[in-house]
Image 1: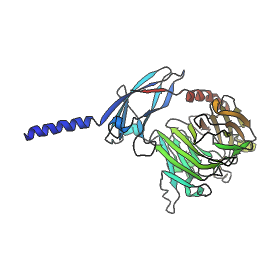
Image 2: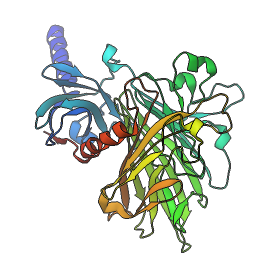
Image 3: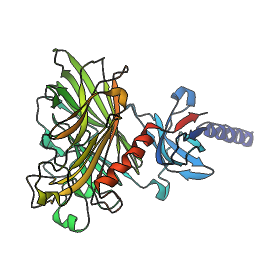
Image 4: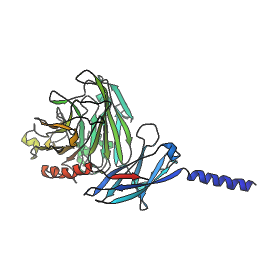
Length: 417
């Protein structure tokens, strides 16, 4: 009798264990005319009730081969919402991936899970330990810019690094590097002379009063305006793993010209193997007022010696591409520490959002308005001349942008069954 009971218990345990694993097929098709490399694929998970358990780990395979992936909690409820992975898919090709969802947590599966993304939101403290936090929020009139280590939320892929200032500017600053690797845990955007000599990258942009690279601004009096009149401003890490990071910059109680207020949430997504950022700006209500983004004219205020042979050049096209190339000091206050850096920058804004194009002494701008969903979606990117594998002339940089624009305009199609 005891033996029968034990066998029955083991059978029930086996059934219960099997019930804690579920595999779905994900079909990914590339309908574009170009090949896709490191293409982002997002698989939204069904509700827990439908899956039958809380998903704690996942495995993705294609033709029996493991595909690096990550499991993300996008709404902060400590339950997984999405599976994310990257796919290489040729033009016109369809690939089928098996995504296995598991209730049991699994450790990293070795080499393929090495971090290719870095995310940091840290505080400056007396012990110089710079503790990591998930969110920082403060009254709009407070000045905690210097209390945030690196002055704002910071993200990095193997190709590029970015930080977004925690103040009324919310400018996007750029970190360029020679080698394709993660560096910001060591340099923290303030590369020392010793690190420079060892081949590390460095901050490559001084925005000053310009718009920088794709920063999102209010637009009043025919020029970009900082977000100075807000009730609350904040930054948070939405999700971060070895393959992608999504961070949020938000302003609550933004005062409009007519005296009313609105809330604004900006989401920035960076993927492994990518130099560009995906930007999604969401508003809490319909707005007919204008906003703007664009790129600054790098090097237009520099002298010939500072430009180092890189004549400032730029383009502003009605199809949504604005780009510039030039060379200037990345920090005007520390010219002896960091020499001039040549860079290229670009934004791509889909034409339905564009209301006007404006060129000023400092910027190439798109004046934009939200769509019917109270949102604006665009992309930004940059390159540094110091890259060993990159672009080194304005001609080559500008020539690359049409393929980039078409690539982000034609994402793969994902079907789950």
